[in-house]
Image 1 (tube, rainbow, N blue to C red):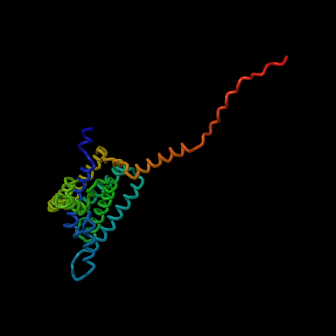
Image 2 (cartoon, rainbow, N blue to C red):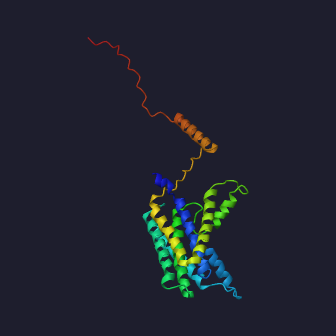
Image 3 (cartoon, rainbow, N blue to C red):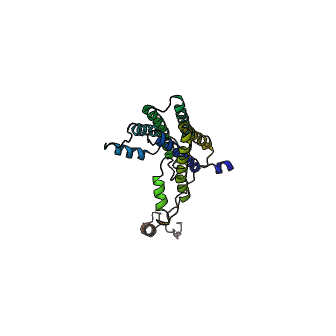
Length: 273
């Protein structure tokens, strides 16, 4: 029971957010400025590259990464289509597959190298495929404010609910942790890329595989049941009127019970002689 309390689904999703930071650092620094998890960045790069004008921005890598991300997300959605909410064996299998894809990608530069644009596009494709599957699995688990691949909506909620905004302050710790962990992951990925990009991807793979192993021990996220709304004044008035109508109808209805027969007077006739 104590182990389940220490391992929570939000904590696991935050760990995957760190892994995304590592993977995106590898994609941007070593794979021609391609984002494996942040598809908004790839779409913006493609939009700028479409203008021409000697921007020098990549096209092949972002296109391949975008297509692979969508393929990974669609496949995961199909697998989880009939799955029950929360962590399940399907979630474990999918995240395990993500870890294996990252492991294979980490070995790629050592085996075939990453010196050509085709090799780099292939690595970007496999990384984006893994991130698409991870993002769709996180979406199924539905941990609030932690998508594991982007923090734009997280930052929006953090600012909007702060004291300068609505002053609600709900979820501030989780949102701050998500932003901090993706930054820490990107920093760790950049440092590991100085040694070798394969080492950085291997580190991300270890994180994902650890999350997969711990997932079955995670305590489920609890949600409060919605409070029952008290009866409104109109509902109370309607109930009172209905009761009064029923009472009036009962009083006005004729009685269906048979009337009691009057008592028969005793006979006074004398018998004939």
